[in-house]
Image (cartoon, rainbow, N blue to C red; front, side):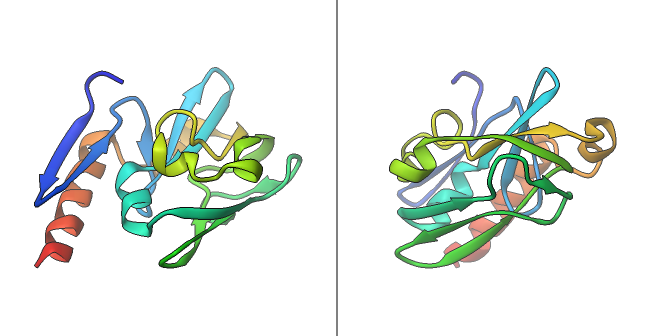
Length: 147
C-alpha cells in the first residue's frame, strides 16, 4: 500500500493508511461504494498483541456508531471494538473465524473485520478522524506509552 503515514518509536513502526477514516479507538472505516469495510489500525493491532480469537457480530446485525461490533482476544487482552458508523453488517470476513491472526499480518488488507451497509455515511464520517488527525493522536499515545 502506497503513501502510508509512518511513525518509528524505538524498534516499532506504526503505519496509518491514508485512504480511510478512524474512530478514536483505532478502528478504521473505508468507503467502498455504498458499503464501508472496517478493521483495526496497525497501531491498535500492535498495541493489543497477537490475535488468537475474534467474534464479529453476525451478518444482518444492525449497529449504531459507537456500539460494539466485534471482540478480539489476544495474549494480552480482550477488547471490545466499537463500530465507526451506523448501519447493517452485510458481510463478515470469513478469515475471522478460521485465521484471525491475519489482523496482525495485514491489518489494512486481508485482516478486515466486516462490511457494513451505511445508514448515513455522510453524517457518520464527520465524527471520524482523518488519517492525519488519527496519525497525530496515535503519535501522542505511542510516545506516552514509550515513556
